[in-house]
Image (cartoon, rainbow, N blue to C red):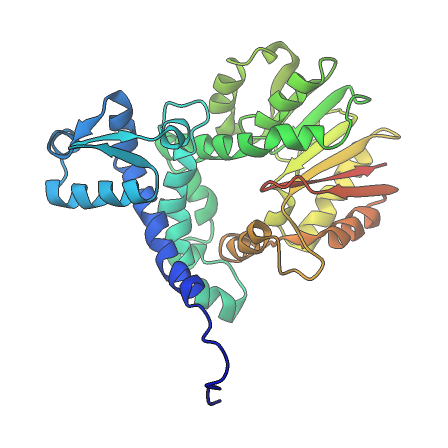
Length: 342
């Protein structure tokens, strides 16, 4: 269609920004994976000294550092580079709030998977086998050795901490006594809940390989005496007794048949007036927003058999399992909350 010379020329900035977006991400990914932020946290450094410590090419490292300066991740004072506050908090692996593990997971797992997005759109299936050569590659990658497991769980822990406090406060949960955090990994949600509700106890329920890392995290928190860990598979094993169950970033992994199976198991295990709290990114009714939910739904396409859903879709799933009241609330963060009562 010929362009109308009388119409104003659209600003190309959004397109140029999207072209550059993966470069921004990869700059942060690589700097994190190479240990740049960890080294700079020990002490600010010149390029030469940092290149020697990390065994990197000096000229190439300078370009990477200058990219990080532009992104606001590193600051430069003369010839010396140092972390900015946001990097010290979120990109240094020893920080309690670190997202470094999730960034390493993003670079090693998500970034290669996203290279096959076109094939996922053509076929409507995830790309684990295409990318990593195995139908079971999801857990093969995450738990292939102790280091990989540590990186994955640490990443999920840091990412989860960003939303856990909001999820446990968006509804008043003070009437509940026992929380079962199904697939709860390191238990960041249980910790947030027990810290906010002093009469609440919790059990983190997850697979055996998670236990060692989870217990280490849980032992460090002030409310550790009110949180236990139990090994189990929520699709097969008996669920822990509780009057409140939590599923965080779980339902979006699965197709409808498995979701129905899991929700039916939870409903059957709950006492009367018990409830299920769900933490998921909720799509707008037109499915075109918010940004995180839309992008995460594409991520689910390449990573899982699931997807993100609207509030109405979650309500339909929950009511089909028997829940009598369902309410969804937005948090303004990467996860929204839905509470369903038996």
